[in-house]
Image 1 (cartoon, rainbow, N blue to C red):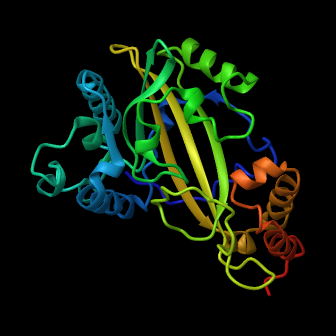
Image 2 (image 1 turned 45 degrees about the vertical axis):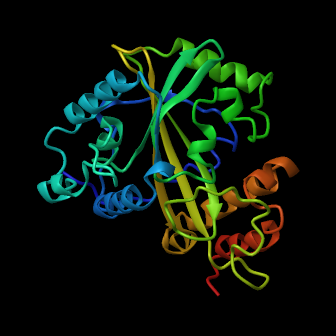
Length: 298
């Protein structure tokens, strides 16, 4: 069964930006199928056909772990997907060159989540295989085979040697098979596109012309971590939700939520602001948020 898409609000001020913020995941809520499912899968199929090398990577030797992930997702979904929500078997379970698609990517074509396989090595946990069609301003091929401290190096406060980098490494080391975890992340974008492989740079002009940000979308990431019982790898899932900022204008909690977003944006350090793509666009975003906080839509 699919659920009606709902407004998620990890930006409500309950957790500051750039916090690790893990909580225990109810396994029954792991994969979220909503009424946007068909659109997400259609976009994944388009990217599979047009840009397969940009959305899938895998080291040799990950095939058994990919099978483990495929079986895990198949078992979890069971009958939850309605028949017309499944990707058509004749569509895609082959790559553009006609070869069968890797099982990790086949699994990803059944769900709205992106799937990342992390494997422990001498340099720590590294990205060993992934199907990522909806990156949030990062490039999968650039992150492939890199350890976590290098993957997170561009994130302020998470580079190698920082306290946060050490915490994440230990968290991965201590993750238990019977205790999956979940966290949320959010950013502000100038369009609703799912496929965003390029970095923000300054973000200049992405909210439209003029002194008030017009083209504003809240891009949310629901991230989960599962320790796989057979391979001992870790499955990292990323589920993207995109809501126009205008959704807050119609929400009774909109003024409060807009104020919470504004407070967090103002509290960003210069490095964090640049990383979020707000280096030149912060003020016009704050003007728009203030209008919503004051319950103005003009």
